[in-house]
Amino acid sequence: MPKLKTNKAAKKRYSYTATGKVKRTKSNRRHLLANKTKRQKTTGRVQDAYADKTCEAGIKKLLPYGN
Image (cartoon, rainbow, N blue to C red):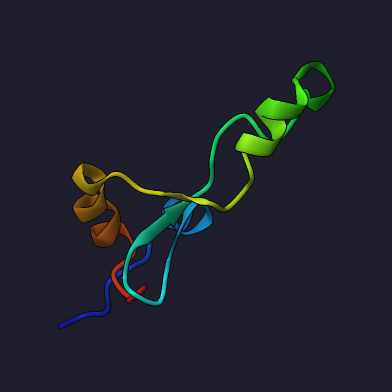
């Protein structure tokens, strides 16, 4: 059985927690931050969101060796 390839785009967007949950990066935090309010910036902290349960199975296929 050959090794499975990791999807590099998914690798940059998602990571696993120690318990096996999928963490994701929130959107709207990369640029144009001067125009956004302080509240928008603080609620959109970079790595503090979890992937939806409906998407989790697909993400785990893209990241076969994550957990």
